[in-house]
Image 1 (cartoon, rainbow, N blue to C red):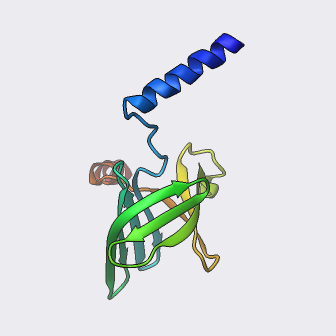
Image 2: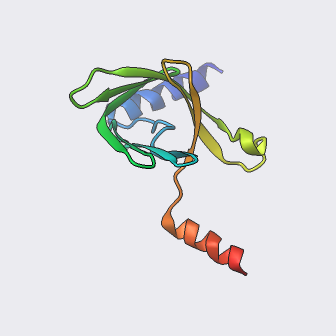
Length: 134
């Protein structure tokens, strides 16, 4: 048991010295739809993010940097004060976890909660549309 701990510790130290680090689970593009409202967050590996919010007649976007601290996602938009959201990744409640799809759960400072699905590529949507026509 002691040898395992030593080897594990050396592996972690070696990775740290090489500048390697585990990718945060939020890296990628996430989206949620509510009738005519569409919101996307895109989180990059380098600690930056891009946010877009489309409604029937409005379009908002922001970009900045983010930091993960335990269950807190700290967003620091360029030129605006930071905001802190609670976050977690988990099974999609709409499918009772049977789909194998994991979603990004965000809780805003006002208590609202949203579940963001991995953003789909146009090629996936085109393939799905072709299957539905058959």
